[in-house]
Structures are given as C-alpha cells and as structure tokens.
Length: 161
Image 1 (cartoon, rainbow, N blue to C red):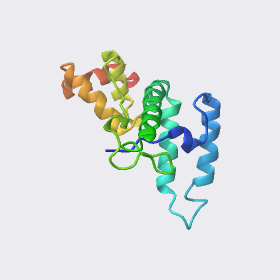
Image 2 (image 1 turned 90 degrees about the vertical axis):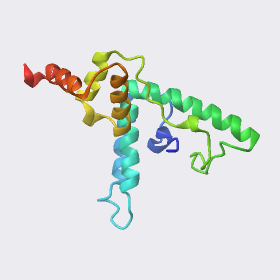
Image 3 (image 1 turned 60 degrees about the vertical axis):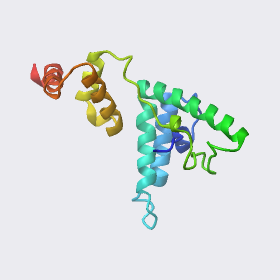
Image 4 (image 1 turned 180 degrees about the vertical axis):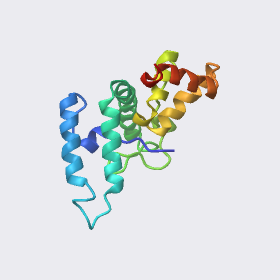
C-alpha cells in the first residue's frame, strides 16, 4: 500500500491556499530542491514529490478529491493515535507500515460523465498513471472498449476537425 502523502506539507502551505499561493510555493520549493542546485544530494525523489503535489493541488477536481481523502486521513490518524495502535504515524506525518487501508488515495470517477472521462483520457499526460488507470477501469465498467475510447478521443481532438 502506498502511504498517504501530505501535499500541503510538501509545499508548505495551508489547506485554504489559493491558486497563486500554490504556484508560488511550488516555485520556491522547486528552486530550493532542484537537482541542478544541489549537486551532491539526490533530490530527484523530493522534486517528484513537489511536482506531484503541485499537479494534484493545482487541478480543481483532483484537489477536491484529495481534500476529501486528506480530511479522512487526518480524522483517522487522530482517532487511531488516541488509541495508540494502528494508524500510528512517523515523525513526517506519514502512516507507518500496517496503517489503515482506507488511507490510500481514492480518485473516484463514478460521479463524472462519460464525456469528462474521455476528455481526461485525451489529456492523459496531465494526470498520474494511477488516476488514468482508475479512469480507464471506470470506462470499462461503462462498457467502453479501448478502441471506442480512442475513437471518441480522436473525435474530440482539435486536430481531427
């Protein structure tokens, strides 16, 4: 299980941060942790975390989904820490091994229209591989084949017109 990642802590912003605050925090963190500025230190993983945090928090839909999961995680870790058993966290706020399965990021697509899901597939490079997998599985549940998805994407693309 992939541990829940606190994107707000990575960028050093609050839950109520505006789009401009997110953009500014991303630029500051990227400058501070960029591999070209820190030659002796392996900062690749940190930069990947910063980029992922920016991508999730900058996209309105992904941010709403993330905030829902974030609040569940905070409630869960607070409740579980009071018990002192499962759900204990490390000093970075990450769940320790064996923490609840419910803390995994959940990018639900069931409330989106078919057109929205097709559009997401058409812009797949803007999203994480995990999220695209969820979108494609949802389209399969709605009886779309890979060929029909590709045909719909081609119909929607501006170059096809």
